[in-house]
Length: 201
Image 1 (cartoon, rainbow, N blue to C red):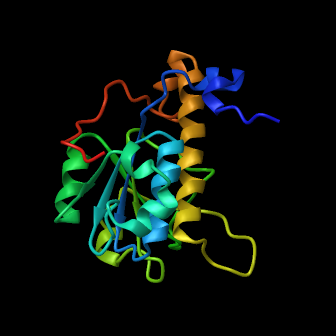
Image 2 (image 1 turned 135 degrees about the horizontal axis):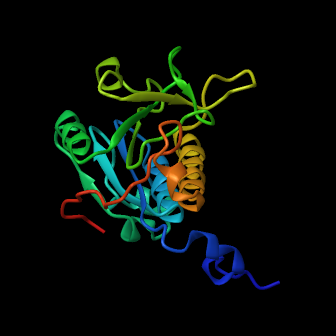
Image 3 (image 1 turned 120 degrees about the vertical axis):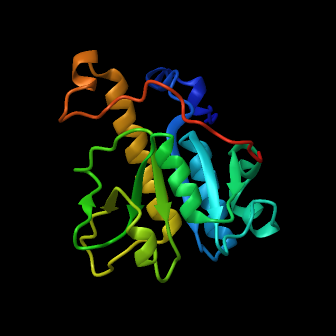
């Protein structure tokens, strides 16, 4: 059977006009080139607006990243940042909600979370996660429900789960009547595009 690109199918109509998704991801101290590449590939699929790379994160130009990104290293806008805290401040000034993906006791369940678009998703090291001082900069900590014996997912897998939940919630927001979009208990709309600096893509 022929495999059609999703955008060539009737199911794609529900996503017309969504790209780029008003979400960026800031990766900090992710060691594995394969994890960074996998996150880039998912970011391309979910139409994220931008990927930021901080700390020891390998760059998309490195062969190991390209091996799992499969070309997404060229289609996804990305930027290496020298100071994570400065970048977070800039994004907050541009209206982004800063959301840390962490398994902290006060974290909000991913499926209960009402994101305030645009959103910047913070993702940390494979072993240690995000340091406490970075978690403290977040407006909200979000966790994925874990019902088995393990406490966390691989960072690239976790990133994919959250990116697609954000895509789902943004689609719901766009489909809601205008009066529901601005309701205090609803998902706030994103009327204007975020300010984006020069990209590498």
